[in-house]
Image 1 (tube, rainbow, N blue to C red):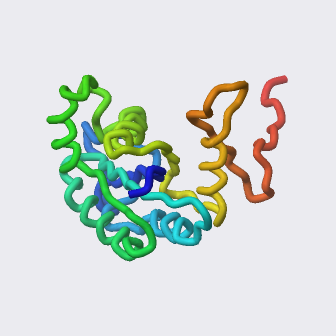
Image 2: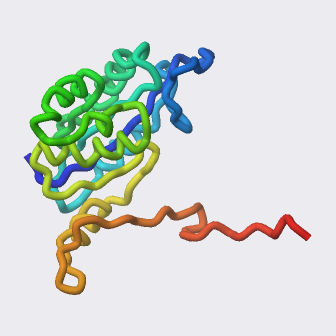
Amino acid sequence: MSKTFIVIPTYWGRPTGQAPQPGDALFDHPTPVDGESTLPRLLQSLQQQEGAEFAVLIITAAVTAAVEATAAQRVAELIAPYREAYPIAQFDAAELVFLRECVPALTVAPAPVTLRSYPTIRNLQLIVPHILGAEKVIALDDDEVVAPDYVQRAVDVLDQEQQGERVCGAAGFYLDAAGEILLPESPHTWG
């Protein structure tokens, strides 16, 4: 299996029209379990990658345990068409149970290993690929689309040295519709 992992968290909510409930995890725009996901667009763009080999790991998070199984099933259906294009797997609530049983042996406190908050999901984006033997991790959100050379460019950056030190991580820019990285400044609202 490839030593470069693209890790994509995907966030799922209650069915369309069902109001959030006390205790639900707070994600800014979870996809309703009966709604249309942006994930296939990203997976399609990954299918067009040239150069570097990679594996894809989808981390499936749900706002509540009540929709975890449905969300996992939806993601399994969404990723199935891409299995021939590249190695792809899903990490969801069922795998989390197994991982939490292993966590004490890994000397990691269980608190940062959940699927209910952005920080803990970001932790999982590093922990799970590390356990799977990743040498390089590229994190993408499920609503992105990447250029055909994106993975190769990311791998190239991670293969560099800066001031005699190996580059172990890098962050990229988001471009707006005009290709700009900075948002336009709005006029001051005070007198």
